[in-house]
Structure formats: C-alpha cells, structure tokens
Length: 174
Image (cartoon, rainbow, N blue to C red; front, side):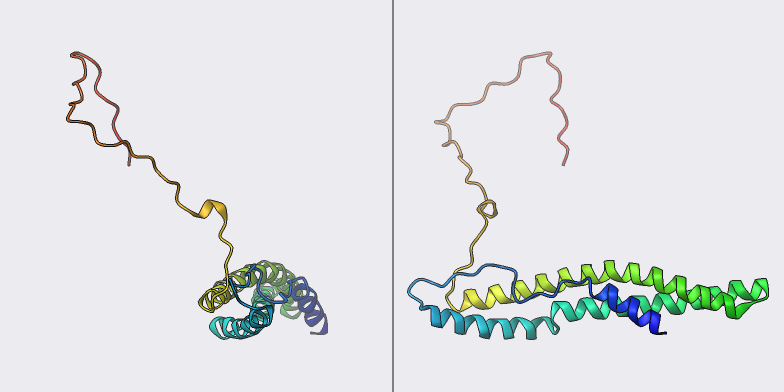
C-alpha cells in the first residue's frame, strides 16, 4: 500500500502547477497599474470560482483516481488468473502491482489532459473578466477574418456562354 501511494505521488508530481493565468492581459487605456493589479486579483478569484477547482488540483485528483482504479482492476484480474492457476493471493498481488503501474501511467496522461482542459477554462474566464473591467486582451494576428476584395458589379455586361461542344464543367464538391 505504501508503494502505491509513493508511485501515485510521483506520477502526480509530474503535473505542472500553474501560478495563475497562462494568458497575457494588458492594462486598459487610461487605467493605472494599481487598478490593473486590483482587477487581476478580482479576476483570478472569479476565474477560480467559474472553473470550480484549480487546474493543478483537477489534474492531481484525476491521477490518483485513475491509479486507484487501475490497482483495483489489476487486483481483481490477477486474482481471477491466480485462481485459475491455483494461487489467487499471489495473482492478486501481482495484478495489483501491474494495475497500479498501468493505472499510474494512464493517470499521468489523464492528469495532463485534465490540467490543460481546466487551465483553458480558467484562462477564458480570466480574460472575460479582465476585458469586462476595461483591460486589453491581445488578439493574435490570424484571428481576424481576411478582408475580401469583391469586384464591383459589372456594368450590365453579360458573361458569354461557353463554346459549343466543350467538356462539361467539373462537379462541385461540398
């Protein structure tokens, strides 16, 4: 049991703990830095309440739950295999160890995914709050739709028909 707690702790220790938002927000025009710092504190708290949990806590909970489930499943499978070979206790012990190892590895991946998903929700809530308080959110250059240059309508000229006997136009794929 001690080994399982050490292994789960080691896997959970691989998760990065955020120190706050992972996005940049700038003070709004005409706003003091003290007001910006106040808004930052308020919005960090608001983002935390919106997500319900710190990203690091969600990741650690996921890692522990997955490792524990792997241990239980491994012990049950090991006991069944051990019973078939006449030694269910040894099978359960080996299965629990293998399940803990597999569950810890899967838990590390799940914890990482849980961390990034929770961090994203936290960042979105933080940016919404900071923007609503008059601060600036930098927008990536590629996020604006490109301007399309539309030709002015033709002056009543008709487009000539295609030449006779030519191949049909290719079909449009939607």
